Length: 107
Ligand SMILES: [Zn+2]
Image (cartoon, rainbow, N blue to C red; front, side, top):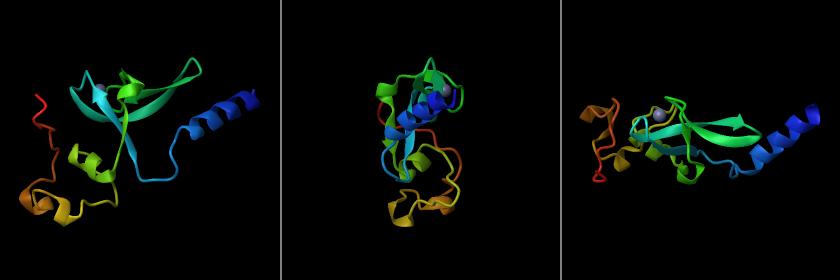
């Protein structure tokens, strides 16, 4: 039924903000950290899933994040580098290239 899937696609598009380099991140209880999320269609409803363990995430907890924030979560974005002036550790030279665990003061 092509009309149905078109409708769903339109609905999905309508919830995505206008073109920005933004990423959806949210806290994954299983991974115990903030993760990038993917989307999945379950029973005609778009849900967010952890990109790592695919656990369904509460969509209320999903936030849009700028590339800089995503990199700070330990992800690599092809073609994007945190401007050196904004990077606390001085970028790669400070050995900060690897996965950074978010050990902020939230514990
Ligand atoms: Zn997870």
